[in-house]
Length: 445
Image (cartoon, rainbow, N blue to C red; front, side):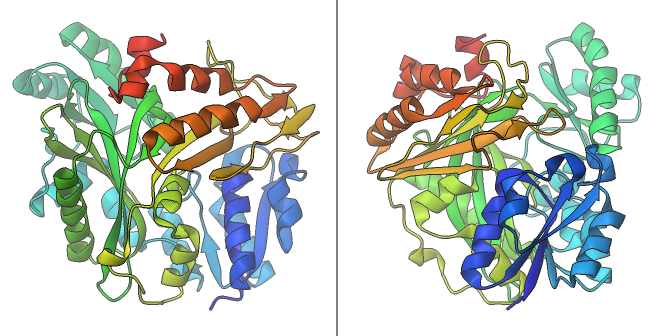
């Protein structure tokens, strides 16, 4: 087993990994920017190294500084968490070349799946259904427009090198396509350093369903069922739940099997997530693969009882998967609310000092957060400040438990998205399970 792991991240996910390391008897090394020195991940790690200023390009996305920190601290492995460098194949390759185990897939698989258009072609070659789209990136507006017209509007313009909603624009006709093409390229270039885009047919009112998969070094693979991620704003998820009320047992089995088959065929190892669009007829289409642990991994942990972070570490250390598919059972229904530091109406970020903080508790309640009374939420990074996760015997109990927990959640000094989550949980369409990716646009904007 590894002796020391450096965590190339910050905030709640860094703290989550530190806790897993502590339980495994592994020393943890935190890295931090100079403005993050008061963060809990710095306080709770066994060691901490400052890697640069607030600007993430000079700290959390600075490969040279992170590798130097790992060398100084004599780490065995590096865990990237999510975001920042977690899906940067160059970073994974440098880790491998410098003798650090990368707690994630190989650099080759990150590169294959990191290019979204190439990932689609790879999955299509494995027999997986994919959304109709361009054959790779489109270079010019005229080329893109010709293709869009050939498959019919609406279409979506998507960044080839990224995800998380950056560089994505929907066009309903030629005029909106012309207006959005350069905007999407500009957003992609700014977010990922690569402005290449590709075109896909836009599936109207779909569910966003993702399947958690895991592979080891020995050709074994399993899935941990699906997550419903349809409630999102500007392609950024707000609330996730598992299992999906819109996925039948037959569809669950089919999506799980085709996902595991892809993992085995590719020889993929460690955690991954296959994301699909599911239409009202139950047809599903591969959208992309995230080659990292997801923000919403806690939902899957709650419904299966499996610690995915520990599984990541053990797999990266060369351990064989000790579970087979039949070992993985659904233990209930889980819901996660992403609590963001932002105005719940305008969604404007709300950094500042937390004057009072109290997190909910009780049976079936989990809070992943790096907040505490007196902590200052910084304006430099993502606005998510906590994840509130609950599990119930069924969906109705999970909804009731989440509503109760949100009522108990106290964060004063800044605005948060808690009021919005309360509204969502009370809304008739959510209670009914009538969910799609345009849910927030339909009912709250």
